[in-house]
Length: 151
Image 1 (tube, one colour):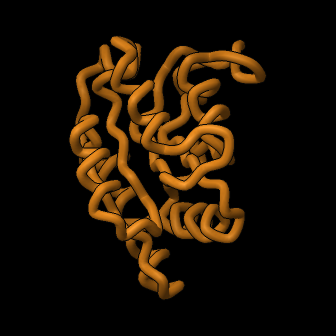
Image 2 (cartoon, one colour):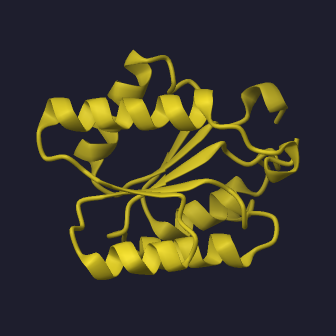
């Protein structure tokens, strides 16, 4: 896979309604063309570390990972821990996008080096706006060194 087809956003979300809403909000702002959606923590790590069904994908990392915490197979905190433990993904921007209001989740993710922790708004319009703003910032505004994305 070529750099022009690289993924900008890796959305890790098991709730299909939240994922669909996030994808629609990103599409509305032309940020979903290079988005990959995975539904559990194992699939997220397989994507990032080129394992399983993602073994043949480009080595280029996404610009940002939007990561839910409550995931099947492997929770978001463990996914974040493995991302930060690997030298190739250690500096990859990761944004927690979760319905959790637990202070322990907030503290644990920051201790692991999360870049941002965003609570999912309950209202449809507010959720869509929040996701769009996250996408615009992390894909269009934020800059990362080229070696982080293996470019």
